Image 1: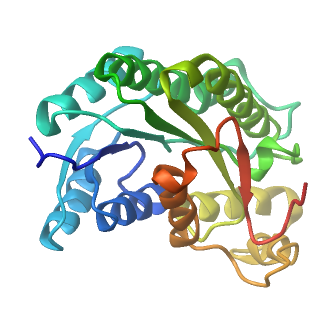
Image 2: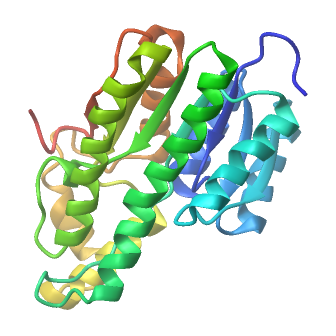
Length: 260
């Protein structure tokens, strides 16, 4: 259990990359954090980093495509820390393929993780927040690909458009319970996911390692590849009380690639 007044966050996909940066940042903001990842070892490592730095954290393994697993994640968080105030549904996957090549298995996996994972976390977190009766914040991982469909990433883009729809609908449905629902939309981030995208694009573009990333990075107005900490800083705002009057938004945090 946490001390009275300590807010509690869950971050999925927090064993590496953007999720790990979000978990560290929220812990630095004073929140107790349940670090969740499909890989239990990476989740445990991030939680240990946080506790070693003086923060409060625990870890658990979760496959967010499994609805029951997401319910168990929220239950474990409440058992460990006493409540849940912030849900960051960050876990996601990407795959580089043309739409003509996407198989039923590809689509099922993409939607199961990127859309189902957001929906199941949203359901479990909102149920707990309504029961607690003091509102809360649900924050979903979208993407610039949720505002603009990208070639070779069509089914990924479709999954992120769906996250925007879930975010808007949930914001309307949960507003009466003082639960805000927003999404963050990163661009080209220096993570292992983008290393995999770079490699996949190379097969279509005829580029070598790092070349597709460099080519796409030319689109960034601010002139540098995004860091996970850039994203975490914005999520910190969404999780804070400064964002209490913001809901239903899917905000670009991409250095100026897609401007709306």
